[in-house]
Length: 338
Length: 291
Image (cartoon, rainbow over all chains, first blue to last red; front, side, top):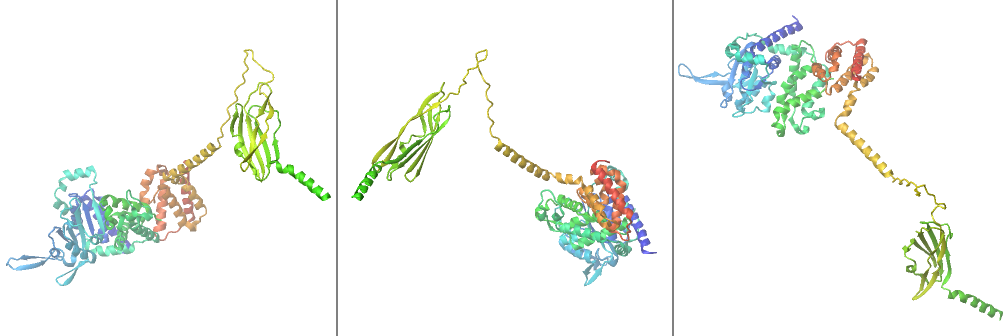
C-alpha cells in the first residue's frame, strides 16, 4: 500500500472518529474538529470554558475513542509533583510500599494524560508537567522515563478565580491549542441535553464510544502527514506575515477601539507557537483531502493556536476577553494572501 | 572824478533795494469766472524776502470755515531758501440765484526780523459765481417740476468679493478634508477598482499569470475593504449582493488561484488568462451598474 492510499485510509478513520465524538458530545463540532487536529498533530490541548458545558466529557470521550493507556488526575491546591510520580501506602502485610503514580504507571505506553482543573494545581506541578509535555520525559527514581505517546489534555473553568493559579506563559506555550467551549448550541441540542436520558449518565455515554485502537500509530501517521503536505512559497510568506502581525499588528493596519496599538502587546507568538500552527494547518489540509496547505487552513487554526500565546500589556489585560479575539480577527482580516 | 561819479550812482542804485524787506511778492489766481457751488479755488502766494526775514505762518488764515459760504480746505507752505510758496485751497458753498460777484477776503502776511514785524497785504480777490439753475423754469400742469432721484451710487464690493472667494475656497478645502476623514475617497476609488484592474490586465500575457492573479486579488481585496479569501465569499456576498450573479466565476477564480499559488504542477494555458479577463470585465460591468 503506498503512502497516499494509507493517508486516505487514515483520513477516513479520522473522520469516522470525529463523527463518533460528535454523536457522543453534541453541539461542539468546532471544538471536536480542533481536538481531532491536535490529536493527529500530536499536540497538547487545553480546554477552557464554563462549568458543566462538557469539557471533561469531551476529553474523556476522545481518550476512550483513541484507545491507549489513559490516566487522569484532578488538580487540587495540595497536589505536589510527587503525587504524579508515585504514591505510598501500607499493603496487606502492613508494609509500606511505593508504587508508580499516574504518570509512571503505564511506563512508555502512557497515551492520554488528562489533567482536570489544571489551574487548581500549584506552579510546582505545572513545572513538572512542562517537561513531560515538551520533552515527553521526566526524571524520577534516578532515571529518565520516556513517554513517546503522551498527549496531555487539560481543562480549566473560567468562572472561578479563587484558589487557582494562572498557568505561566511557558506552560501555556507548550499547549498546541487552547480551545474555548462556549454555550453556543442550538435549541434542539439543548433540549436533547436536558431531556434525553442518554446524556444523563456520563459514564455510560463514554463507555458507548468504541475504541478505535489507532492510538499507538498516531506518531508515525502525524509524521507522514507533516512530510506529505506541501507548502508553497506564497504560503510561507503568508504565514510569515501572520507571525509578524502578532508582534506588530499596527504595521498591518490592525486597529482596535480605545487601544494604543504599539503598546498593546508585551509578547507576540513564539517560534514554537508558529511551528504548532503550521503543523496543525497541515493536518487540517489532510483532513480536508488536499495535498497542499491553503491560507484557509492557517486561518482555521490560527485563533486556537495563537490566542493563548499573545500577552497583553497589563494596562489592557483586564479587557483580555474582549481584546484578544478582536486582535486575532483583525490580524486575519488584514494579512493578505497573495 | 568819473570813477567817483560811477560809485556814487552805484551806491544810489543799491540803497532802495536794501531797504525793501520783500523783494518779490505775487498772488497767482485762476480765472475769475465760471465757478459754481462747491468748486475749489486755488490761490498761490509767492514771497521772496531779504535774508534774516522769516514768514510768520501763524498769520496765514487758519484752515476751516472762513465765513458763511467759504471754507479753506488746505494750507501748504513750501520754503526754498528765502522764497515762500503758500498754496491755499478754498471751496465755495454758495448757491446764487443769478451770477454773483464774490470776494475771497484779503489778509496780511506777517514777516519778522528779530523783534520787528512787517506786514505784507494779500489783496482780496473777486470772482463771479454762477447759479446752478436752469435758464428756463419748466413746470408740469400740476405746477411741479420734479426730476427723478438719481440712483444711489453703488458701494465698492471688491473686498467683499475677494473675501467671498477666499472663504469659499477655504470651505471647499475643509469639505474635501472632511470627505477624506469620512472615507469618501476610498468609496470613489472603490467604484473604479476593476477599471484599473482591467487596464493592468490588458498588458499581461500568459507568462505573467502570477501578476494577473495578484491584480484581480488586489481588486477584490480593495472592493471588500479587507483581504478576501475563498472561505469568506459568503460574507463578501452579504456586503456586495450584486456579485452573487458571477458566483460561479468567482469560485473558479479562487479555486484556480489556490491551485496556482499553493500547490505544485500547475500548467497555465492562454484560456485561463482570457477567463480571468472575462471575470474582470463582468466585475467592471457590475461596478458600473450596467449588469
